[in-house]
Image 1: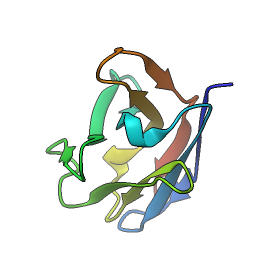
Image 2: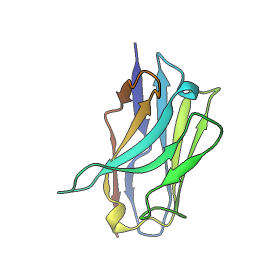
Image 3: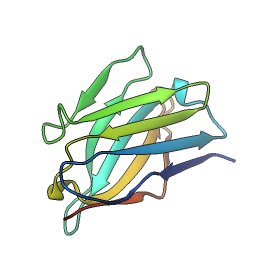
Image 4: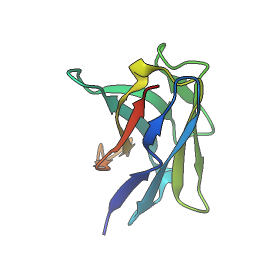
Length: 118
């Protein structure tokens, strides 16, 4: 059964850090591009970080560049999003997405809520 399960969200004060995890089952994340999306209150879903399946090439939205880091552990079949220096505007539901370049198949997790507030 193909599944992506995010975890690690919660309430955090501005300036603090969180690490989100995305555990995959039923397929290998090493053969997929991994994207982290977020959807804030009243906002559209946006992609904030990507790790391409080839090498360790990554890309980030300008709003998180220098603060967020995407990574993966192929042995654990898990991807991560390290979020530092969090801001209230980072408050959102964060979703993990796995995209297969050749087949165009997409897998989605159900999301994890991150709330940044004092």
